[in-house]
Structures are given as C-alpha cells and as structure tokens.
Length: 104
Image 1 (cartoon, rainbow, N blue to C red):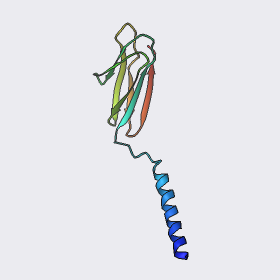
Image 2 (cartoon, rainbow, N blue to C red):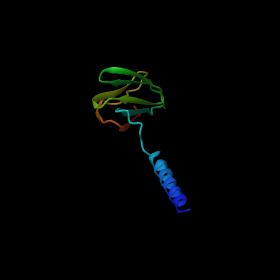
Image 3 (tube, rainbow, N blue to C red):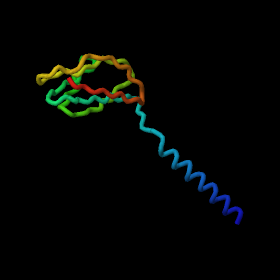
Image 4 (cartoon, one colour):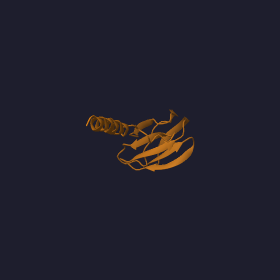
C-alpha cells in the first residue's frame, strides 16, 4: 500500500509540472513582431520598412510583421489623401512585440 501511495505522489508531481510547462512561451522563432495599426478615418497607408513596401493598411486595420533582430527604419505613408506618420527607427529583439499606431 505504501508503494501505491508513492506512485500516486510521483504521478501528482508529474501532472503539476506538466501543467505549469504549458504556460511557457515556446513559440519564439528568433524573430520579433512589429504590429502597426492605422487609426485614421479615411487614409490608406503604405507600410515602408528600410525602403521596402510591406503592403498597405486600410483605415482601422492592424498588421503584424515578423522581423529578424536588427535595426530598422520604418514609416506609414498616406496614399489616399492623408499625411501618414513620421519615419521612426526601431531595434528589434527576438521574441519581442512592438506596437505602433498612426492617426495621420
């Protein structure tokens, strides 16, 4: 009977440890994420990162862009009558999320 109690105790410890491990973030792929939000009411904005277009953002839209660790220059440029937002610099670290909102 004592042996059975020890086995149950070991199983209980293993279950607790396995449940706590599910909370770990194991999805780090070595990249960082830049989340851009276009909060303008009527301006479509072009996403420019290091001079390369990463598509557009409609008014009210949000987009996640995965970037490798490095320093980037980025800007949202208004292409449908609005001004967009000023250029900015960002140093991306692996596993981090950076969020910016443009109302221009």
